[in-house]
Image (cartoon, rainbow, N blue to C red; front, top):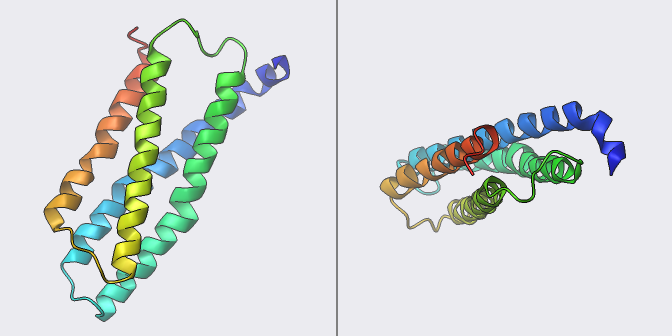
Length: 148
């Protein structure tokens, strides 16, 4: 895998760029859901939110998540990037897996809104909106500080 070494700065840059795009969507979609809860089902506003949520999810979040995983895996395969005996990367990987789970939960909530069958209150989405932030903090600390 030594052929990846000269590509390291590009791979790392693309990983960070895709992660930022993914996080933007992960933070914005629950906020859209909060606002979507405020409008009547079947209203013009509800239909507009459905379009916004779909475009955000399909055009930004999904591609960004896939790119984040691909560039992250490439970084992990690049010799010398990960100290496999350290513990930080386990925590980072677990947090990224959890983030992907939140992504899946947001997908299910988006489908519920699309089919006018959302049963969750605004408070649920306000709390859910904090989960990606906490995971992002853990991930960044693991990568930059490498506490263990």
